[in-house]
Amino acid sequence: METLPFLEGENMFSNDFIFGCATASYQIEGSIDEDGREPSIWDTFSNDKRNIIDHSDGSIVCNSYKNYKDDVRLLKELGVNSYRFSISWGRVIDKNNQVNPKGILYYQNLCKELLKNNIKPYVTLYHWDMPQWLMDIGGFLNRDIIKYFSYYVDVITKALDGLAYDYITINEPQCIIFMGHDLCLFAPGIKYNEKELLLAIHNLLLCHGHAVSIIRRNIKNSTIGFAPCSRPLVPSTNNQLLYKKCYQKYFSIDRYNEFANSVAIYSDPIFLGDYPKEYYDIFKDILPNITKEDLEIISQPIDYIYQNIYTGNYYSLDKDNNLVKEEFDFGYPEGNIDWLQLVPEALYYGPKYLYERYKKPIIISENGFCNVDFISLDKKCHDPQRIDYIHRYLIELEKVSKEIPVKGYFYWSLFDNFEWNSGLRKRFGLVHMDYKTEKRTPKDSYYYYQEVIKNGGVL
Ligand code: PNW
Image (cartoon, rainbow, N blue to C red; front, side):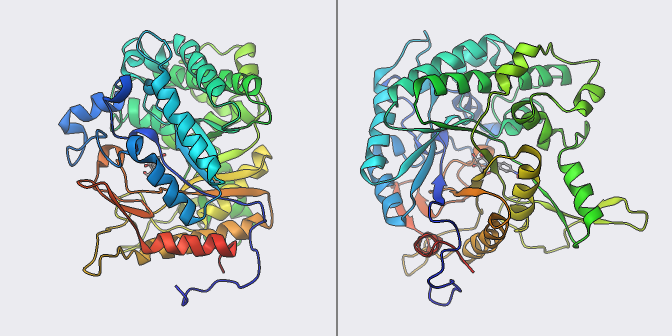
């Protein structure tokens, strides 16, 4: 580790910077039949073996439902001050829409264990594992989802009052809608037409909005956010016109291309009180019924702009000043998953664009690297590429934090875990997971991040 260039004695991020890591319920908990948990759409989806590349599922993974104390011990030793995890709706509420006290107890115990170790819980309320019985009545297409989600949020926030103050309503709405209901690579894998997709987005945003009022009512001193993902456009040269065009395209809607990644469809209604004008123009024939009351609910003030950023794309201008996407060269540095190219400046430009438009402090709710990790003969897990990735990305984040308020960074993920349709094959963790024995082995990057946190930043 001593060969890595830390800036000694200088706190590069603010003293109260949130250094955390993140996980999600279905990806780590296992114990899917324990204590009356209801099956989720991800149980159903992974039961169809065609859907997951290695035919695995979330039935065991890290078994964090049983091992949560070990998890907290690892977090403590890592030195993070915050841990972002998600609640499994189906553990907390049963199929008759009644409270399941055993599920609630699990999350209360987890929060207590975190607090005992001075780690702040950051609670994601929806990280994709909708109870199957709710999908059966229409999921996000059925406006009743708002009522059910509100009830669930009311129950869990009352139960966590005094234990957790920081909430993220919904994780990566673009993946829920686009991957789950258009590309059908994620659960539920049910294809919607465009009109249905827009309605599902609107109902999802209403779920967010109602959750905001419930959290505010139930938790004093709460902070609230919403965590979309994006692939920021990175200007490949320092040029004002190029910057402006990249900014505009980041927030624009391309109906046939980047609908999935659209930032503005999901975030403008929340932060600016309405969908972008382009949305009304492009989709004028298939718009959902959007009322003034809906927009008021959706746009209640929230505290942070959370954003999951892993990668981006470089752009330049051609001779007529048109924006051109630069293709990655053959052999360009990338992770062990096809969408993860090394674009560290995404953590500079993404936060900058977002702050410029929405004017709230930024928290990176996910950023991480997928590597080919295994235990070496020396019994350790060496992952130099992940160290380099974190290093490069944090340099960019630190740089932008001198220009705009950046409050925190959550590495994805604490452990290797169930990587959705990629199953157990793809590893993002700081801690290696042996899925047979549930043995947890901190990787080199775990010790690297530990040093970063101790130091308060990287050079
Ligand atoms: C996120 N992209 O998904 C999810 O929130 C996590 O549950 C997941 O395990 C993690 O990232 C790693 O995949 C993403 O194309 C999917 O930029 C795609 C992208 C980013 C994040």
